Amino acid sequence: MKPKIDIFHYLNMDDEVDDFASIHSAIEKDIVFKGTNLWILVFAIIVASVGLNMNSTAVIIGAMLISPLMGPINGMGYSIATFNFPLFRKAIKNFSFAVVASLIASTTYFAISPVSVAHSELLARTSPTIYDVLIAFFGGLAGIIAISSKQKGNVIPGVAIATALMPPLCTAGYGLATAQFYYFFGAFYLFTINTVFIALSSVAISQILKFPIITLVNPVQKKKVNRWISVIILITVIPSIYFGYGLVQKEKFNEKASKFLNSVTIVEGNYLLDHSISSSDKSINLIYVGNTLTDKQIEIINEKADLFSIDKSKLSIKQGFSLDEKNSKNTENENLRIEINRLSKEIKMKDDLLKANNDQKLIGNQLLSELNSLFPNIHSCSYSESLIFRKGSDQSSQIRIIIIKTESQKLRNSEKEKIRKWMENRFASNQMEVYFE
Image (cartoon, rainbow, N blue to C red; front, side, top):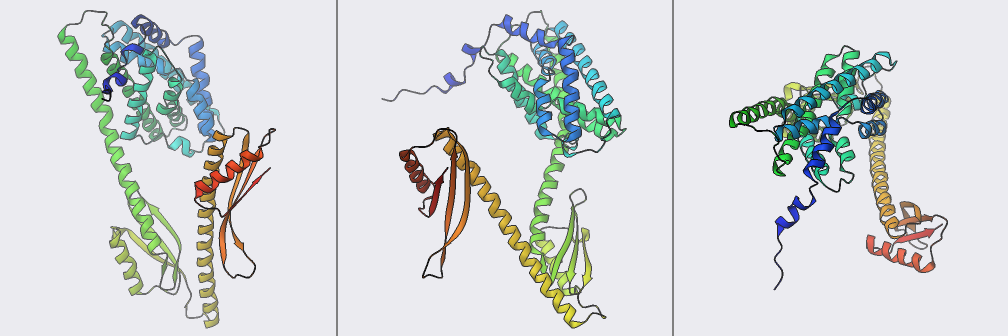
């Protein structure tokens, strides 16, 4: 008889929870912002501001790892769950001080920085949605569980990156420095979402793990605290749901517009020269080159717009230049038609080649990862696909060419043969050449 599997045994965290006094001491210590913690925060804010200014993702991630902002947020959640109001006031005080110091540091940096262009990393922090709520909440759950565990692990740095507390504050500073208050309010709202739901996750885990309540609390106070928590959650979540819905609608429109454009690239001798899509007002502009567009051709484009649920009233169709203008010669028209067809084919060939290169890049990276796990001394791998032509035959066949390079220690012949067999099994084909350097 097979032993019965107890799923709750694997989910139970009681055995791994640290001593409550140790948890309390660690949270209380991380709340305070003075001396070392304060300087680390200011330097992290400046590093994150430089990263946003230069549009460098790596620098922004580094700043998030340095930042000590998680401490007072977890402290607020923990103190609410344990009804430790003196600790809560201390956490709020230190958190407010940290936020003000961060805004001053980031605003000062952007005020003196010669680069004032809003890059993609900056813009990404100005439009929070319900998805940011989910990231903050589940990231916060992971963080407070790690703090409560005897085995702290490396969860806290990951939570700092996922919940991204630093970049929104820096973006808010950019909005203040450049007097673009749309950036300030959008970024500060994202920071508020992260703060509220990291704190909420701390409340939830503190109650689930039954952290002891030190002070005496009457039912009226408990109801008041719970009521305030509910109000803050609603105030924070409702706008994010609205923005999230808008984001989903924009993505759906972009997807439909992309399919529509693919269907109207060439319309009876007319080639789509240029286009623009505006997801905010759901409009599409098309510019064609070729013969003058007839009413029938425009009707065909409109029918395809209906097919993809594109509003015809927001579809603009224009003629870039026409091949059959009155003063044009027939030979010039014919040459232009030929050139358009040639360009169309060339664009398609380039698209196909780009797709093939991207596919080969993905396969090459995957191969290197798999080979490296089997043979750690392999440090590079080249992968390409080509055609092989054989004497006496007009037909060609596809062949894969793989070049494997190792570090100082060379592969033995048995290992090389093992790799060749593995390659044949992986691709279910023996049409390949494997070389070792």
